[in-house]
Length: 300
Image (cartoon, rainbow, N blue to C red; front, side):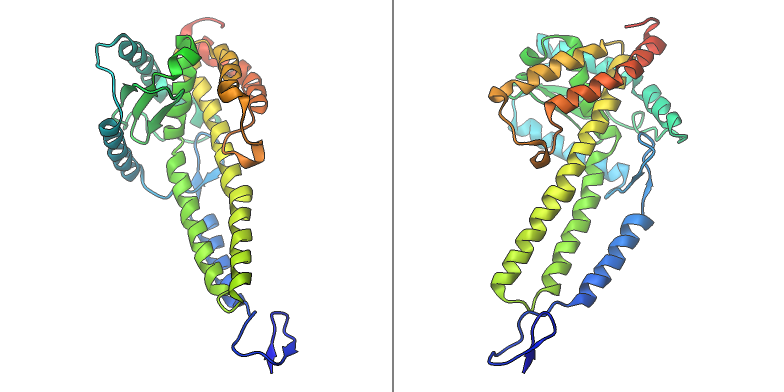
């Protein structure tokens, strides 16, 4: 006689099937709680608890390696190309003000400035590509794709995008994703051990359900939260560098029309719905205008 997954006896089968090793689940739950709540630190930009999977120095080293790889695979424009000069000048203005904005936003949350901006070894490349995109890696290595320039239309909008990407690096979002991924991977391993006695088909169903739950309930919302944070910090950077923050609204309206406006619903995306993103940016304009007035000597 055997017991099924609910503890009832059954006969006529060979080999154990259906059992869940609950002690594995409980052990992992305890470890996850200790790891998540016991190893957090305040994010100076948001005031919220955050978890990091690497040190700033480690992040910068990984960023440099990734940037060097990109430069070998993509086609950077020459330094004297007009678009390179244009983007470099925008980047310089953003970088020059980044330490002050970093300190201002940290002070709002009663936190000391992390002083990441002054530790970064900043550089920017313009890459020949139809992509309407840009990035800033940990450590301050930036790139703008030429496909972004006609969509942005003006320097103010380019600064909004570059500010957003710089914000991801200052907020250490890559390191936060690493910490989350490590915990998710351990959870998947623990789940695999815990259901190891179940029927293989049941195992596959459970792991598929777990994967979907993790994706839609944890990873994607986490990504959308990071985008929202970067929108706010990036907008303040652009405003403090004396670019017009209001350019963000028509920029994201144009971005929303790319690819015929086709995109997955917000719950299935790492990015906020364009309408929600624009509404959030509009709500940030009074704050951005204060940053502009403080650093640029007048209202915008």
